[in-house]
Image (cartoon, rainbow, N blue to C red; front, side):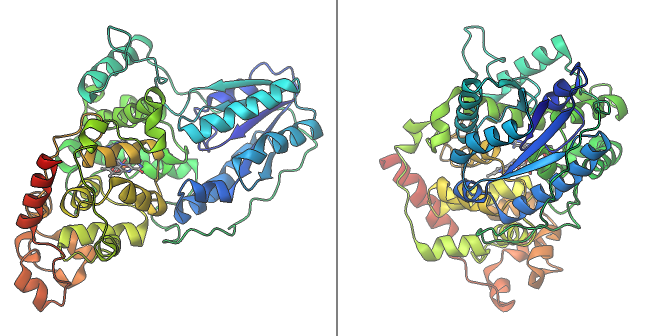
Length: 466
Ligand SMILES: Cc1cc2nc3c(=O)[nH]c(=O)nc-3n(C[C@H](O)[C@H](O)[C@H](O)COP(=O)(O)OP(=O)(O)OC[C@H]3O[C@@H](n4cnc5c(N)ncnc54)[C@H](O)[C@@H]3O)c2cc1C
């Protein structure tokens, strides 16, 4: 019998490991497994909402697998260290001869998989892995010298060229398998999990492949044509909000590309800004594998970080986390995160820049806080986003490029629409008024925790003297 191990790839469509295990399997039948590892998740800063969302999607996956006659078993392990033995136990119990899984790229997961691979090989079980979380596997997009790209634009150009040479297609859902006399395990609704933070907001991100696909198709039909113009405006819902689904793998990037190819009216869909954003996701994954020290929280550009002197002031960090900095757009973003588990990309950049450049707090603190609270928490993209914002990442802007939160709000939330949702005391005011200290005071808002001009000056001079 063949075993498929599901991790952050909770889908039946375009699933290389599942598809391969179900093909030409000589009528042996296919079994599925997933591991519940709460201590490991906590160690890796997984948010509560993401864990709940993952469980709900696992349940939905189980229903799909049932229709294919593939029972889903669960393994409970505190941490990754216990997985090789627990998998082996299951493999022996059901006389499994092959394990199939899709690769994950962060180092924790790579180490886990190597240990499992070694243990199973040693015990006569064959292992097969696939690159299905990305369209083009890390290491396959290199420059002419055969080296990794360190800058995004040439990477994206090369990525597009490689793609066009192969046009990788999404795989279909596999055929029904022979029935097995094995009962699926019951997926728990919840598990005890220590992480603080907001619960999964089911009404915002309902679970399941069907939900993800319908969101993708609605995006392609309605928002894709205006994406480039609207993606930076947090007050309107101009982006796909597919990130939670991509993060737990309910939908794949190949499926996203296939959908715009098939359903958008745009002949240049492949050159579109949305595809560029999907390539950013791939870029961050490639960097993690090709520059492994990034997994250990090292900056991509240590020479820049050497010049920065981070400070830590608990009251400032707390104010940032709670959305009480007195800067309306920053506070709105943090409140959106704390209330829903998600934040608009433009506001992620504003809040991250504020913490690292104006409050001069280490990007690692912000990155961990985001991971602990985001429903779409993704080690590679989060690390990339934070390092970029702190100017220590690949392709990052120079350190002295500091976002002015007031200017950002005026440009991207001119009417104050977004900020009003999360800081309702400022409703009815435009961005300029929302950031006026006197009006803020009248409305009972917190005093600004810093003077923007002074903080900017200090940040730049400390960097130049660093
Ligand atoms: C400081 C910071 C932290 C971030 N942390 C995460 C994270 O933990 N998880 C995460 O998925 N994204 C992260 N991002 C990237 C981005 O903010 C989100 O992917 C995006 O806001 C998700 O919204 P959407 O699904 O509507 O995206 P859309 O605009 O519709 O884009 C489609 C998809 O492309 C990918 N994508 C878009 N922008 C980026 C980007 N800049 N980098 C990598 N992938 C991208 C996402 O998978 C997204 O779902 C972070 C960005 C910053 C600046």
